[in-house]
Image (cartoon, rainbow, N blue to C red):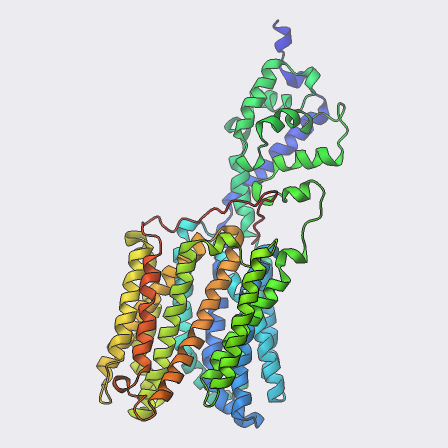
Length: 609
């Protein structure tokens, strides 16, 4: 009886022992990769922050350079306006699709393509011979910016754990505020010293550097896979001894050579496998034994290899079941090209209509464009309900925190930029202040954007997203209301106080809502969530400025004076819409926990970074 219990490795062929040692070597390498993660996260944070800052800086410096560009290229006002409109339409129409590309093919790759393309387009604009080339290259720059922007959030989502994601987002927001505030000063200095072409050359070195850095960065999901794979190993297997070799090698022996006790131990040890790698009980009894048979007892056919290989891989690296059965994975259909086209048409027409409505005499073309956007949006909704692989995942759109966060960002950005538009005309046309003095009146807004962002993660951890966002919504609404009561004699103190309230409220809402959107979105749809966030941040300002322009036209004599016009009260009402959106955010201090979307039947999500 004692002979029957002789350790199994004594009867195991040498090839089986070698296979076991290879598996242990693989797991040791995986555990080593799990410990090396700081450089990858640091480079991801650098790429995300610099990429977002370059896009913010590019938009602000262009405004200063447009008059010099118009004179140098002998262009009319409409052509110069299209240098901004073409960029906005391209960006807004492609942000969500770019996020889907990142989810499908990797956020680092999409980010690198966007950054390198942005650098190339910027260099081309600096060398452009005419206004037509500038407009075409600005559209190309918008396409590359659309690829770049959602990936800045998607990379953060896949590189940082959810409980540490608020701080990188706050750093990103602070740098965006700093870039937006410094843009007019940097742009004015460059245009005065070197001409308008230097403004576009400014963004070439940083975008080129972060594009190459993104390509050189090790995939952040490799770290997650390493941690997941190392957690699949039993403690005894991590420090192999004689008993460990006996148990592991016995799982590789043919059924005829195995003892009943060994088989019972194998069935018990199968409980150590991750849920994604375990078969149902009925299938486990049928498949567990043939999966790892010795070569002498089973010829490894394709099906056997397909079943045996996933047990060594973390769940995120495994292909969907359709591919495991040998079926071809969906290619272009998985990107939903028709849905992407309809969404691009809807958003592009909407942005174009809002921009046109803000121009003198553009109300009719703007209304027609907005009507076209509504038709395209209706067609998109019908298509997405029937699509096998919808561009906008239903589990993302059904998430109340995600929808509330996007709505809060849309209303807040519309109120802020509309208020800045009206107040700028008030200070320069009514109070006759020069541009520099006008910028100094808004300095508190910029300072609170930069220095208030790092405090937002602390507030979220202590009070939760709902209370933090609600406080920001109250400050933003109060700032817009007080701004709407200023008369023609308002001095620097009341204007600066209103600007401080706007800045504090907006930065609190932006950091908190962005954190919730990125946290609560399933990791497999991080790119689409980032695209929705960026779409709200691009459409909101256009909507706010268009609303302010239309309302200013209703009071031609006193519209620029806040207390005598209808624009700022209406913008304060838009700001108040952030209150119900903020109240719909998670309430607890742990409320930013990400949602796990259930996989569709026959599929497992594949997350890429």
